[in-house]
Length: 618
Image (tube, rainbow, N blue to C red; front, side, top):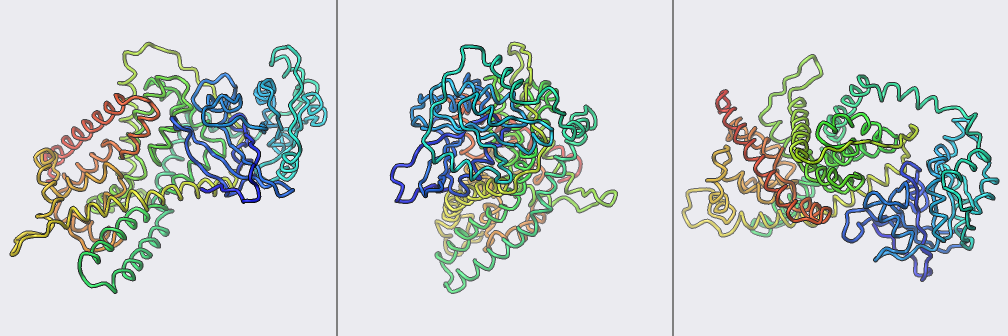
């Protein structure tokens, strides 16, 4: 996303936005910058870097850098280390900010004041955004803002980022000359926080957050809480198909009409085939699944914004401990169901180095959204549409079973990877924020960012791979009086037959072998790859409907189930392995993970294929 500044602002000020997790920092960043953001990663690590442009009341501009959430400058994770280094001016690629905006949650002031007092010791100008004032009022928690401002010696702006309250005042405060806070007394930070809280708040008489407490009695209950978590996850995965279907149908029709409009004026030949089967089918085969991916990301963003995800991590801490991990690994693994890349990135919040490495290694086992196309194709083609009890479909149960198998396999793999390591006590310490309605603006901006990233990949990697596969499937042309389909004589056909001796024992034919190759770079091309190798001259949207009956007629149930088992375990795209290499800084871990996943995929397919044949699925 572009954050280019107008030419009238040649030297914008550098401002950093910092704060504890759950302080509303991201919502405030979105309110200040809107769509003028760009997202990247810091060099050498997979910590996300977000920068935006803020327009001040006088028309000048400020570059605002959203630093990762941190509880202290005593870093315990890579993201906290980034925040510390930037604030102290010790980051190799990031200049020291001229001003720090510290976002402090009014509803959890005691905890957040500790980080603010730490920041005040580094000698950088500070502006305080006292956020979530509405939640503090609901808790009858009063704060003497002028008194606290005078005691700290810094400007304090009360805000409610979800409602844009105080955002205008914050822009005016940014326009003022930055001031370094005065030196604090030489006492402990904890003693200073106690004094400030007793003098400038009514903490001792303020009521609890009764609504949050009442909800937590159910959400954190050892029985009902786990049942609720199971229901939430079940609904989330089912909605990926039900809610996204209308939008998918629209995209399918759109690409069908686009293909007809583009290629119909052209005569039959290489150019016609390239545009239809290479370019349009390559883009359409992936873009059609964008709604499913956005639905999954929508759930993840909403659950995080509402305050439920930390509670889910708390509930699953005991289960994760049985695998040698802590509940902090839950959120990275949940993110991996959308894509393993952000899941691996999210593992930076796992504090223990061993747990972080194991979480990264099992993240590819989680069923990413890129596998949905092949799952949907094979389930629709080979699993009957039986319905039980009037609302539970057999196809949906099979899909849920694939996800459950991936989760169970991940837990077992984690237990194996942590076996033999020194026993360590896993103490999970999480801040459980109050429940809140998700900010629609923050949800929308998050979805737009993911959509742009996904579509950028569609326009580059996916189309390029499909064009390459089209070329391999069309050249060299068949000889005169050829008795077999043209693709049998192409390079793709020859490659498939070379691979066949390895994959024939698990029920794969040479067409499946060819389709596995582009899947190493991007799993999303699986359906279009199968359509290409079966020489279906249609765009992906029609290919998906034609390909299903064709496969069910030519493949056995054993082959279909074997391929499903393969996709549960097979390594994900090369991009995932590259991010894993960058995050762990170890090629050995990447090779070990890739080899183990290939071995698991082969063994699972082998068992599935022969057990199905034994049970009569040949």
